[in-house]
Image (cartoon, rainbow, N blue to C red):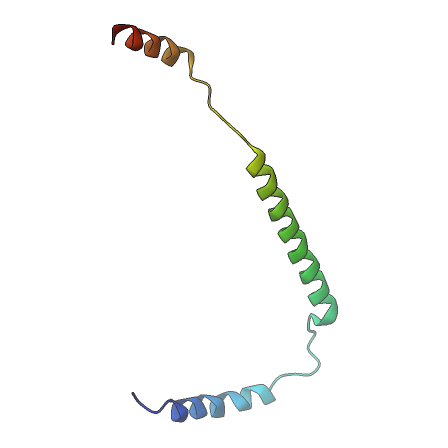
Length: 79
């Protein structure tokens, strides 16, 4: 396996000048953006948990259609 440290150091060498080019006057999300994202993530988590609980309570059994009911009765009588 080739030596990975050489390729990693080469990649870091190319990325360091890019990091120096970052403009300090640019607007970033900051703490407020993180807080809003965290609140939204917690809300989605809570909604998913609630939905899972409610879906677990569902006991859905499909009623047979009118046409199927008479067909199954005739089959059981003949058999």
